Length: 124
Image (cartoon, rainbow, N blue to C red; front, side):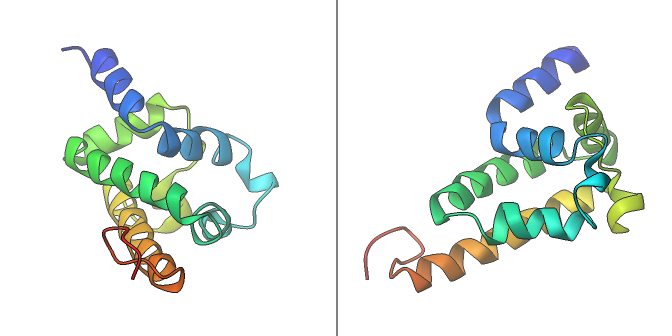
């Protein structure tokens, strides 16, 4: 499988994260946002529970599929993101993806609890 085929398949399985990286973190994202944290606050912390649950699934997939720094960097480049994780966040691309996944996981738990749902989505 070529790199092009690999990344095309990854993008197909991660549309929300692809949109976050390619649209929110476009090449001039710094004109609209003070820092990467502000983007994540809006797109994760302030997003509905269902959106974060879908994003969590995508991030679990991405962290599994992008098992090396080369693959993670290649994915960010493939989606034409203007984010440079090491320069913009102080973390390597793979570390940043793991950090975002962990953040989304925490937000899902907090939102589920505050909305009266257990971790599996059942009403409590």
